[in-house]
Image (cartoon, rainbow, N blue to C red; front, side, top):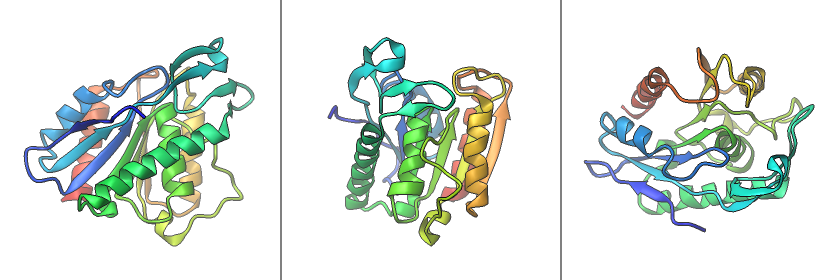
Length: 218
């Protein structure tokens, strides 16, 4: 496993954001975003792990950084569930590492863009049995959510912010909205925010994320 990129804060860390990049990107992808957010989150560490490089079926089996293989796009994405589970385990190991450094899990946040967002949603609301500080789901979807699923009381207490582009053709807006509706149905304190953008990140979106994190860490 490639060593995560870690951005230490100005002050002694008392919170952490673990941020997963999207398909084909790398651990440096959200470094500028982390640096911008850290200007207002002076005691928050940012940890940015790197997905393994492996063949991705829908991209002609071309090798690229990916948290899991996507084997088909329609009607819904067909994925390699074991690879998703392995990636979630990697995130849990990072949570445990932060806990070992003295950071309470209720001050640990999971953030992910696109495929990385699918991993953090699965980690927080399927695999991790405790309460986390929150989840930031950017332009993403939840391939393991279903109507039959029930959350534990501690999972329900992990809030979420779902952010999506209105014109996203990579992960359709409706896919993100479905993940949000599941969380809302399960009693999670979840918010939905959309922007006039495609599959990308806007400065306004980063400002909204900063506000949301500040409210939960103050």
